[in-house]
Image: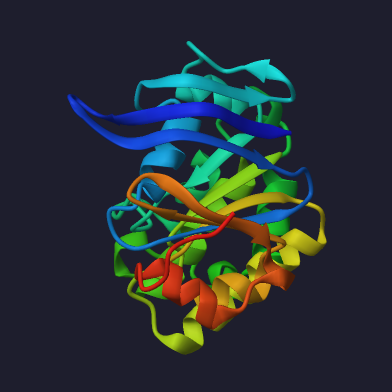
Length: 237
């Protein structure tokens, strides 16, 4: 459904990603793991048209070159950004409703809210509360719910565990697992390798802007992954 071919991307004269050719299977959860600076968030930004790139990105076999970020969101390619990025002075429900901005979602706002509140009952309790007064875990739920309001065909989630207590991480990832079981195609960027492997179907390890390992999650030993993650072992074909 979504793939990259010889993708290069970066910032100004600095190249971060080097010739990435990846395929993200429809209906699967693909985890992108790697240390800081590996290029994980840069990959998501390229996929969503936030930064220029060389090479090709294909969605359903069609190239995405020249597409605007908001057009990609309207097509169902939706990102939940790192750091939540909620609108602090707006209520929880107002934040969620912003996710229904694409035209195909506007007639289904009430049903969308019901779906989000079923996944995140705490947000129903907080729906009139200012988003800036929420805990980190609740803000992460708002960010994920806002993404779901866009009725994503492919959901890109960037570092959902960042800054959260372990008990909240478990709660957030249980929701991610439920979304996968419901058939949502998910691309997950995550530094917590243990929790990423627990929900993933496929795993790609990035280091230095290149793919160092690609394999089904079921075939990956955590110790081996950590050796490659920290460059303690040379990658093998």
